[in-house]
Length: 310
Image (tube, rainbow, N blue to C red; front, side, top):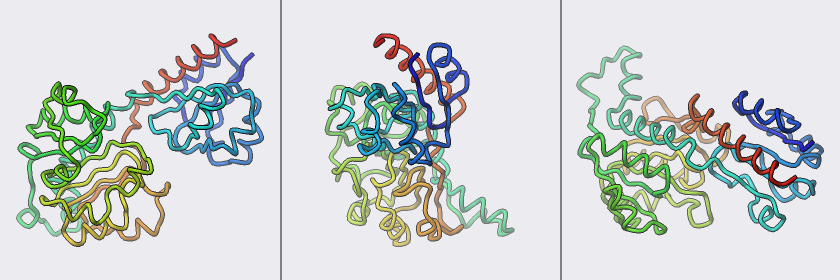
């Protein structure tokens, strides 16, 4: 019987569905124990991971049985996809399955930061009653700039437009006709920086996108926008982000992803309760509903693949 290894949390019904067909080892703690994972991975035909399990070449060479990697999410920067491609290993992300969860997160953060909710909350619970000292703004009439216009970017545009926002996007791989379908204006990166009141990032992490938002980028932003990153942490230079906020180049930020995860004290020690910001632990795409969708999708894919490749 073929064997499937699951190294991070997966919805139990989906684990049970796979176990009806194949031998399953479900051990979420393996994502944090590379030595144990390296000693076990050689026995499995398929492995299912999230973002913590680092499937690099040094680990993948430990097996010649592995033919399928299921990713309970979208980003693939924790998987050596070049090695997989060259060694006949299929990599299957759960594309689109958590898109609505991430899109809701972006809208939630946009509303909260426009209305200065973090500052209003802190002021109220500390007894200051900042009813007239903290300004609140509306999402209606604001320009939201999307860096990347894939599945999640499209979902964000639909939700933001329901609030009356104008959407612009920078994505060199998207045709104007595709953007027109969503009533979105394609612009250059510089134009997006200049006109946006909110900037939300929906890009993969590559050599080109690493540190895409650095201090020079923040200096191009004319409207002191809110920055939201639910994509990959290293796309935003965190040191420059804090400096840009303190220099009033931006009016707030929400981070769900970081240069290093879990987030290091070197970064979070710079965050004070007087800052208009939201920090969350890489959970924008993880809801009860999305976990079911993602898990079911990958379960179906691994069952189909292993059944077809006996």
